[in-house]
Length: 452
Ligand SMILES: *Cc1c(COP(=O)(O)O)cnc(C)c1O
Image (cartoon, rainbow, N blue to C red; front, side):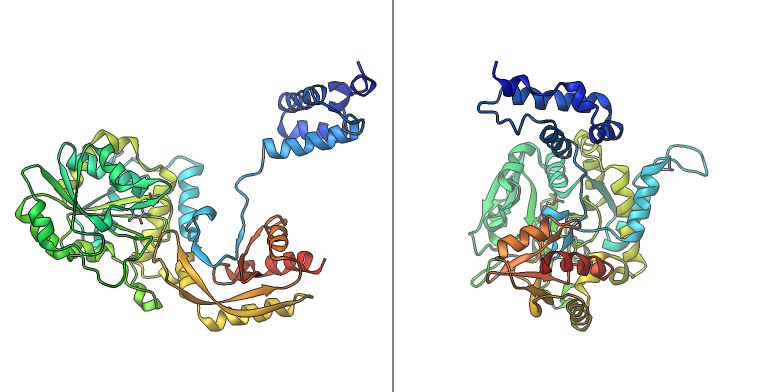
């Protein structure tokens, strides 16, 4: 045996190091001993082991590092300077204060989740939220599930299994993460009948495709791309008439759950759940954590008979929403009832921020940073597969200096990680997606990173 191998310290000597002892107290001595053993074994099996690697100090350092990657703190809050409001990798929609409070109440103790406090008997957990959804969208009934992908699978499985579903060729889309409409239909046991062409589909195309086997008409909002130019899609009201004449449901997936009027904020129209129901869709579904501004959820609203059929399907139980998200969603919807969305829901606070206030914040930040930074006028985007191509006027801080990749790495790996975006090879930190309350932290971090 060579001397380096022979000199590898014992497990017990490493474990008795003060820093490792502290780690053991934090994590548990079994787990830390396991990690030490694992590392020492890997050293013993290593080809060309250096004498440095075999020294106590390097071993301790390495074990501390390994512990961080083995049992990391997760999730780590980040400052979103990307200007993408619904950033899927950063968790889509942040919750309002009330939504956070409600989810804490649901999480931290027992609650009347499924209990009627007056009678002391079991009560349906979704009764209150259904009432609120009916008020907001004009539906007769509602059901909330885990997310919209599962809402769509459940709806098609319960209403169209064994039959045909008619969809416009332009809407047989992929939503993201490999979630593709043709595959969802296969899973649901329904046959996809594509009608029309990629850019133009007419009412008559649907009428022609109706057969004895047709179980539903499906309209998907192509939320993550835009077909422009020579295009045509029938209106929901026109399709509703065909559905009614044939006694089949018209199912409308509107995607983002935008209940506010986006055109008031300079954005393009987005199909809204209440408009869909008003125009005659029998089932309308949308996400909780896109433009609704709440937690992850798949919201299904529509006619009572269909919702009841959907709710009774065994799959409904399998994709049930959890109590924490349900509580957060309930509180989020109350903001709409109280008409206080712009003041309370973070993404709508961002979307409705004035240019003046963004500029003032940018100036304030710049005045407190001792380095080469400037303010530029830029655009934020909605993201999250909603309103593709839409831009919101914004201001960003532009940082010069290091190469942009180096700088964005430093920002990302700082104590309070900052996500930036690179544009024309400079690093921008967009202020629209950063809550003003974080400006102080941002200044502190930037002063550490930019000046050294
Ligand atoms: C985003 C989206 C979905 C998926 O919603 P999740 O809640 O993320 O599962 C489904 N349909 C449309 C049209 C969407 O835009």
